[in-house]
Amino acid sequence: MLCEIEPATGPDLTRVRRQIAMLAGVADSFLVPDNHLGRATVSSIAVAQEVHALGGSAVACINSRDRNVLGFRRDLLTAAAYGVDRFLFVRGDEPTEGTRSTDLTVRRMIEEAHSYRERSFSVGATVRVASAVPSWKAAADFLLVQVSFDLDRLFAWRDTAGYSGKLLAGVLVVASSKMAQRIAADLPEIGVPEQLISDLERNPDAGVDLAVDMVERIRASGRFDGVHLVPVGRYADIAHRLGRGRPR
Image (cartoon, rainbow, N blue to C red; front, side, top):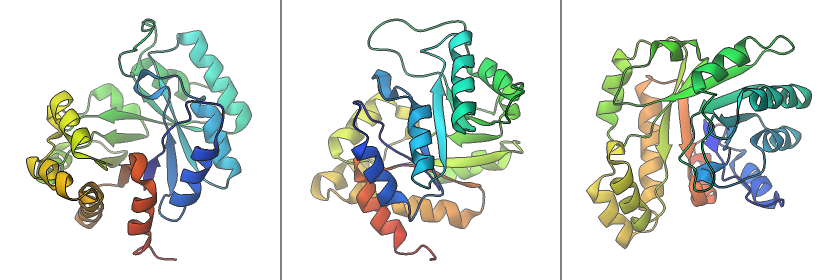
């Protein structure tokens, strides 16, 4: 279970520490976003080191949007100095301020990280259910699969993916009907169920219920190496629900 935490948009890491403490009983590792949704956040490498200091395991996300090749090499050097050795490389959302850097790609980041001599890094990337795994992404050590609420479609895709590394299926906790409607409009390929939107209007826990059910069904299928869980603000509820059935 790779749990994505909500990043710190200010210098106070109290909320980050609270999430780690809450989810420690269900998460095997934590994914730390990088300038999530185009907002400035505390460095994912710094937060990953904080996770390690709290006794957890972390994957630091790094996007190509905000850095050039030299800046990325600085990040690898900083990570090596702090003992952070697991990364997720992404392109990054369109920035709300400033411009996108154009001389660094996810493919280049994978190549640079794997050629780093001073330390061995484990690196991952993302892939969509709607498409085949690009040949260059086969060099990644693990892939996070985009959230899909259609598990039959997800399982069918996995059976033909042809990827030999670790695959983690994405599960998103939809916190409100407003959030569900926004995702349905902006990311139709995710396939937010109409039933979920109406259920959330009556029951604010409907998104938690569905996410827990999806985690259990993905695990039972045996098709994936794990789950990438995005609990957003419902991390306490998710920790409680998933923790009840976790061996101790």
